Each structure stands twice: as structure tokens, then as C-alpha cells.
Amino acid sequence: MVMMRSVLRGVLATGLAVSFVFLAGAGGAPVQGQSTDAVVSVEGGQLAGAPSPLGDDVMVYRGVPFAAPPVGELRWRPPQPARAWEGVRDATAAGAACMQRAIPAEVGRFYNPGVDRMREDCLYLNVWSAAGPGDRAPVLVWIHGGGLSIGNGADITYDGTRLAQRGVVLVTINYRLGAFGYLAHPLLSAESEHAASGNYGTLDQVAALGWIQRNIAAFGGDPSRVTIFGESAGSWSVNHLMATPLARGLFHAAIGESGGAFGPRGGADPKAEIESAGERFVEALLGEGVRPSVEAMRAASADDVQAVAADLVLSTANVDGWVFPDTVYNIFAAGAQHDVPVIVGSNADEMSILGGAAGAETLAAYRESIRDEYGEHAGAFLETFPAGTDEEARQARAASGTDATFGWEMRTWARLMETVSSPAYLYFFSRVPPAPDADRYGAYHTAEIAYVFDNFGVSPHPYANRDYTDTDRKLSDILASYWVNLAATGNPNADGLPQWPAYDPEVDAALHIGDTITVEQGIRKDRLDFIDRYYAAQRGGKD
Image (cartoon, rainbow, N blue to C red; front, side):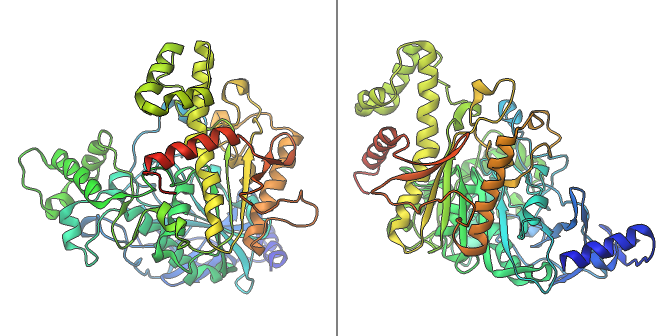
């Protein structure tokens, strides 16, 4: 089918045969467009995509609605089914990004979601496929990161062409962010049949996975082989999707890159706390002394909501008894998570671009901040992350943030898979991408994404265009193969690849992805063990 599609496109390009269909544009008016080779039928109607600019053997369908626009009466409600359309819908342009705050300047050097327009009407997905309708290719579903407050599934960094050329159907999704995705409020809970509010971003992700189950076969995908994967908040989302009972049966493997939800708060805060934060948010939105109502909340402009969200950040899940019956940590500890194989891991220098040295500008400031934050555990902390100079203090502060926020989370995720039967595969990424200031940033947060997607030089963002080497390209080929293999078989291993053992807490071995690939035991073990003990104390000694 892939070869047939390529032949058809070649015939069309040479003018030997031409076939047009009429497309329903954004305003519903028919416009002349793609060949019938680009048209697929899904539950809402027909879609016309286009060959990928990065490889014309791959068809791309952009801006596909998987839910109704969450605007007006649908703001701060669970997603509703997408509306059907007449004719053939033009699926050659991405949908809008979700409403979001500005990206921090330092992070923007490395990651820019390409948000040139954003709207509340943003629940769209994008599909890359080299398969035909009769094929049953494994499916990879990417969930973007950005702290649950920024990001865009249509970011060119996540272009799925290269992965689709490896035999998967690649899907990227949007989901509501910040206050639009995570505002909980007593009035919203009162009108809910589940007495729940917030967690709308997670519900959007569940809705997208449901749409994929019902429709991915039209793109040549196999609904029984769906793997979800994401980075940072996208990985956090994967972690949460493994915990929510609402996503059961919607995916069959999972990959988490640098983001988990197992810390002392357990990945979901008490409902009452998040509702209280929501009350403060609504007071700021409507004005002090104004009696709140759901009508007034939904009547506020999207820009006004986003303006308040810039100061009062809402991007936390809550234990609502419906989406999350308990914290993510407790769900995993009880073995109640979805029993699917996982790849999880983190990067060596995550915090280098995330302000990881804040509060440690000098050695004295570092020691004082640790005593303030860690109290009786400060001595053990300073032994674990020692520093004797101002520069060492900055490095120690960043290292502790990397380990506590990312390294520990991902090792804990792998360890807690012992409560179910499916294996976990743990990695540690330390390859430093080539750059003029590579020594300053190391293997920073998001560094692995270009390797996973095999997208070197694709992004127009200046920092993304660097002199990648043959070593980088070889590592990319291996990583992309592991990810695709997990989607295809539930196991990343295959002939010709370095053997990756399933994680065993007693052995504590991880795949170390550096300038070469090795299997290494006990990576940063002493540091992660300290964090383990500290977090256990924060949870009241409960493991």
C-alpha cells in the first residue's frame, strides 16, 4: 500500500492523471484540493490530507477535531463529541494551539512550541501515516510537554514523518492547559454528575485516545497496538493516564520521558485544596466582592481568563473520585495502574535550562536555602550534594533538582511497575547535543526529543539547527527503533540493537545513552536513595 501510494503521487505529479475532490474549508465552503488518495473517512466525515514536506511517502492529516470546541457552555466541562461536517474537510493545516502563557525566555532557547495563534477552540490532533486503510500498523500517540500550561501538538519539533517511515502511525494531540484545563471550583463540582471539576486536560487526553480507538484504522493504524508517549508534562500525563480508570483499554504500552508524579504529594492534590485555589482564581477573574456563578465564569473572555492565569497558575490534577480515585503514587503502589509495558527515563542535566541553580548564587546562600527547605534533613542533603565554592553550590543545586524532579521520579516509576506483571525499561540520557555552549547546558531537559523523533534540523528555531554528527544520527536511529519496537511488540529489543534488560529493582540497571550505549547499574544511586528516604519521610514514612 505504501508503494502504491507513492506511485499514485508520482503519476499525479507528472500530470498523467489528475483527480480532485472538493474540500470543506474552515468556513464550510468547498475549495478545490487534494487527490482522492489523500481522503479518509472518520466518524465525523471525510478528511483530505497531504503528503508530508519531509517525505511524500507519508500522508499528513492536520487539525482533525476529536472533540467539540470547549467554548461557551462547554468551558470547564468534560469534552463532548466532535460535530460532524458536510463534504470533505481540509486537513492540511493545523488547528489552533490551546490558550497558554508566554514561554520563559531561557526555556525558549531550546524549546519553542511555535504558537502563532491560540484559541479556546483547540481540541485537534494530527496524524502521520505511510500505511493504507487495510494495514494494521502500530500507533504512537505523542502528548506534548510544557508544565501543563504551554505547548502545542502541532509544533514542528514533533513532526511524525520519520517515525511514520519506520512503520507506525504517529498521532500528536492538543489538550486544555492551565486554568482552562485544571480549574476546579465548588460551583463546577456541584453541577457535575460526578461531583468533580478540574482534570479537564486529562479528560481531553482520554477523549483523544477514545477517538483514536474508533478511527485510527482509517489511517492504517491498529487500535489494539496503541502506545502513548510524552516528555515533561507529557510524560506526567502518560503517568496519569496509566492511573485513571477512564483510560483503561485505550492504550497498550507507555513511554515517559522526564516526568512523573510520585513525589510527596502523590501526583494529584486533594480536591478541597484545588477547589480553594479555584475560588481565589475566580475572585480575581470576576472581581472582589462579586458573587461567583458558573454563568459569569463562562461569560468571561478567554483573554481575561488567561491574563489571570499568568499570575495564578493552575496546572495540577486533583483527587476528584472520578478521574483520579486516589493519588497516582497510591494507585501504582496498590498495583491498580494499567498493566502495560513501559519505557521511562530522564536526562543527565534536566535543570540546566529550568533555573535549577536558583537560590544558590553563592555557597552561603546554597547552604542557607537547604537548611530552610530541608530542616532536619539538611545535613544529609549537603552530604549527598556537597559544595565548597560558589560554582560548586550552583552545580549542586541544579543536580539536586535534576535528581529529585526527574531522576527519582523515573526510577520510582520503574520500581512501582513491580506491582503489576508488565515490564519496565529504564534509561538515562547523557548525550550532550552539539552546540557552542554545550558545556553549560549538558544533556538538558528536552534534549532527547530530536533523537526520538529523528528530527535533527527540522525546527526553524535557531538553537535546534546545530551540527549534529554521525554519533548523534546513530543514537537517534537506535532510540527511534526502541520506541517503535515497543509500540509494535511490547518490547523495545530486536536483532541488531543493544540488548536492553527489563528493570529489576534488585539490580537497578538502566540503559545509559551517552556517546555510546551501555547497560549500567546504580546510576546516581546514592543521590536517588537519599531522595527516596526524604520523600518517604514527607509522606509520613509510608512507602
